[in-house]
Structures are given as structure tokens and as C-alpha cells.
Image (cartoon, rainbow, N blue to C red):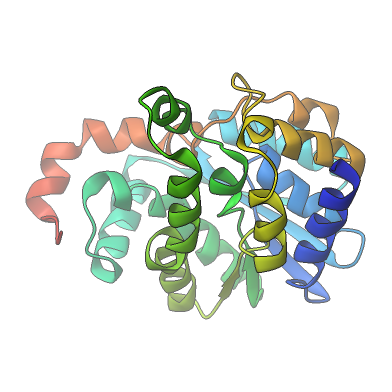
Length: 254
């Protein structure tokens, strides 16, 4: 199972590549797997954004060093986070908790565009394919049809996360691409029994970690626990601190 999955992942990444490609990078499993495969066929530059000394920046620096790839770090402070939030709000009328996720996307896309990149790879879709959120385990405990939920959330990503990321990247003249959002890969993963996709609850995405090991993802990344972008980047803490001001200045559109 892992060998065919590794081959499908390799194909899914390779078909998104240009000779020169940018990767939105957190030092986590999804983005590191993409970078590990991509560097064999393309000139890769990694981009990460977050507050100074945040978890994602520290992890990205270590992972980039292990991969031997250049990393551009965008350090954010309160002002740059609020500015990016306002700019995202002008593009996407979402509520605060959805919009905060787009802040690091905005700054990464901006940095990649400044370096002349035309395409930027993201790990969207991996959570739904490989059961990456704790809430999925809770859904199963509650007796919900988790397999149907995962398939529906994956199917509708272009109307949610993928669509939002594309719009922000388009603002900078960059095409956002999503190696995990690929039909042949999705069909193969959803054919794997749900219990096998869920066997690693602590770290999450156990079979993706096994495939990553086969593909050469650094050991420290394989052992890193899942961390959502808004938390790993430190942005959620700033947004919550400024929530009253943000809600006054940028009322939710939905």
C-alpha cells in the first residue's frame, strides 16, 4: 500500500512543477513532503511566515537545512499581521477565524511574487485525505459517517480553502497549485479502509508519514506533531489579542 501511495504522491507533486517553483512551507509533514519530491525535478525555494521565533519558523529552518533548500522567512509583527488581515478582508469577506488563516498565505504569496515566482505550491487537501484533524476522530466517536464527511469536505475545497488561497495568490500574479488535490491520488486514498487512515491519532496522518519516510522526508519532520498554520505561525494569538479592534474595522461579510 505504501509504495503505490508514494508513487501517486510523487506523480501528484511532479505534475504541478515548473523548472523553478515556490513552496508555502511550515516545516510540517505536508509541505516538507512536497518539497522533498519537488527538489528532485525543479529548483525549489521555500517560503514561511510567522511571528519571530514561532514554531513554524524554527521548524522550517531545521527542515530546510535538512533538505538543503533555500528558505525565505517573513517575520511578522502585530502591525504587519493587522495590515495583511485588512488586505485579505478586502479580497475575501470571511469571518475572523477563517480570515486569520489567510494572513500567512498573503505574506508568503507576496514574498514569492517579489522573488519572481509564478507558481506556489500548498498542502491543502492532505488533512481531508489522511484524517489530519482531531475533530474527525470526534465525529467518528459521535457516530457520524466520517468517510462521507471526509469525501464531501475534500470535494468542496475549491469553494473554501483552495478557492480562498487561489484568490489571494492571483492578487499577486501567482498561480496557487495543490498537489494533494488530485483525483487519482484521492481515489486511491479514499479506497484505503478508514481505520488504516486513522491508526495514528497522536501525530495524525500515519500512512502519509510512512509514505514520507519512503520518499526521504527528514526524520524530525516525520515525528513532528500536526500544528495548524494559524497556531504554528503565532498569528492566532495576535488576532485574538486584537479581535475587538479587528471586528470594528473589518465587519464579517458572512
